[in-house]
Every structure is written in structure tokens, then in C-alpha cells.
Image 1 (cartoon, one colour):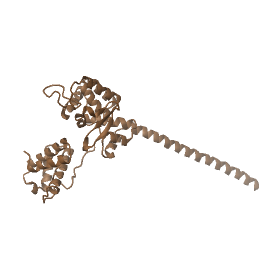
Image 2 (cartoon, helix red, strand yellow; image 1 turned 90 degrees about the vertical axis):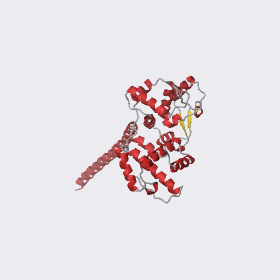
Image 3 (tube, one colour; image 1 turned 180 degrees about the horizontal axis):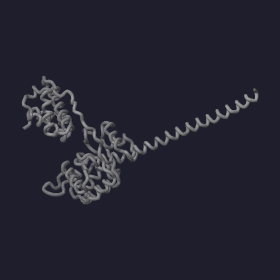
Image 4 (cartoon, one colour; image 1 turned 60 degrees about the horizontal axis):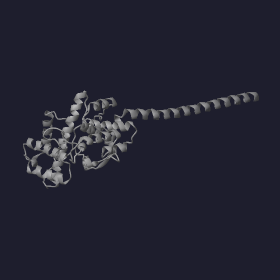
Length: 316
């Protein structure tokens, strides 16, 4: 059961326009933490936080998960101090966990072909084509409305994406075709674009977990490790390999920082390879031209020196 502090904190997050997903995540983490605590919030120190990290380690939580817990706890104590006026110290002053920095994993062209060869359901094909071609997050696809798609201009207005940001993405011809084919068979007048097709929840908006289960089904079917986010990574990598500007990819993906997008430079080997050989060709041409100039200069010097020697010899 949530404490009164958590209830007020939830309201504060909603007033600040945090997404429902973020609010739920924060409150769940804090609920776990407060259930674990054996002392009042006012008595929590760095010692308790260290013991809590040990508790998470024993539960085999990943470093990224533990960091998320610590960041959430720190924000909560900031709220208690700054908004509720509590005379306490924030026990999480800094987070020193070392996080791995794995490369974004993407699908090879052959793997993309294999995946979409088994996706025959029209709704699923349209959903996953949007992730692959438009770089949409699974949450963005789940919340997509029918009116958000402009088929004439071939673009989608993504409302209230991650960080409460709006953006426009563009639709490739194959994604547009998949969407139109799906809509031609869709009889519902519901506002949400993707709906549950079977069972007692039929006609309701398809949830994030529902979409994830569908990609897990197809992933198992072809024996590949595929996720919704991996389709987004694939789109970014393919664009970079096709020489799209990094700032363009940043805008399409909705990244706040260019450094987030730059991670794809580490995996887009085709572009790196092309850039290397293109630049190296220029370097070698310049080196050869400089060497040729030096060789010609030495030839002129040697001829001039020989002539001077002959003239001098006659004068003697």
C-alpha cells in the first residue's frame, strides 16, 4: 500500500507532465525501497543506501537497474526537501556505479528479410514496419492515433514522445503500403491505430506489453534475438550507412543529445569503411603528389650541379 508521501509524489509528477509510464515506474521503485526500509525516511543515510545496493546485488539486478533505483530515490528525496520542506539530507548525493556501454545492436539486411517473411498478420506487419522505417519507440506505436498519420504527405506526428516531446517522422513507401493494407481490413472506429484483435479485450488499444509479446513470438519463430528497440536501432544504422547526416537521424529518433545518436557511429561499419577509404584515397594522392614534386626537384638539382661541375672543370 502506498504511503502518503508516495501519493503526494505521484500527484507532483503528474502535475509536471511526466508520462504515465514514468510515474508508474518511479512509484513502483520507491514502493519497493520503502517496503525494504527498516527506519523512517528521515533517518535514511548513505549507509542504508549502501546496504540497499547490496540487497539489489543479491537479487541479481543489473547495474542499469540499480542505477535507475538510485536515481529515482535521489529525485524523491529532492522532492521531500525542496517541495515538502523536510529538514533532511539527501542520502544519494552521487551515483558511482560503473555501467557497461554496449553498442546498439541492429539487424543485418538478411535478418530483416527473414523477420518480415514470417510476419503475415497485417496489423503486426504495419506496427513493426513503423519501428523499422520510422524509428518509433514501442510506447509511441502503442499510443499512435489514426489521425496522427498523414498519408498524402507520408508523415506521422508523434505526440508526447519520450521526454514529453513532439516530433514529425516520415514514412517510407513500404511502411505506407503496410499501413494502408492494414487499415483497409480494420473496421473499428476507435481513435487508437493498433487494437487487440482477439479475446475479451478485442477492440481495445494494444498495450506496450502486447506489442512486445508479438515481436517475441516472431523472434522465436525465426530463431533470432529481435526486440522492438532493435528495429529502431536498425533504422538508425541503415540511415547512417546510407550517408544520412547525424543531426537528421537525431531529429527522427527524437534524441535530446547528439551524443546519444553518435553511438550508432560505432556500429555503422559500412559508412566508417567508406569514409576511411575515401579519405585515405585523398591522403595517398597528396602524398604521391608531394613525393613527385620532391623527385622532380632532385632531378633539376642534380642536372644543374653536373653542368656547373663541367663548366668549372673547363675553367681550371
